[in-house]
Image (cartoon, rainbow, N blue to C red; front, side, top):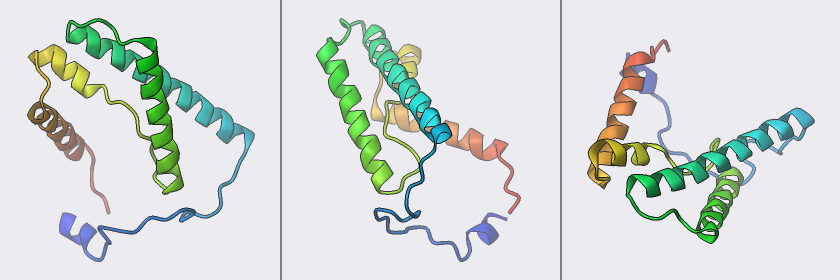
Length: 128
């Protein structure tokens, strides 16, 4: 089934500005994106403070949190210009891994992401 789905599909494609057409604007889209942006900012701030608490270190200073949010915003604008359907933001899984294992290494992160993807693959039917 998977082979049939993948046959003839392009795995890599080049991205360029405006590849999905010209942007459209509306009040509903603006409010939806504003809510998503504010939610992402609040989640990132929570991630920064939760990671500091999990590592038993002092909380990050305000200027460092502001700098992190700014870089996430710049990444979101860049990914939007390139046509990505997502933004760049912090990820809560490493913070949870610090709590669960007491350490956070690249190997732990790869393992938990692999498990997440495996679970999603098993729960998602491929009816194509």
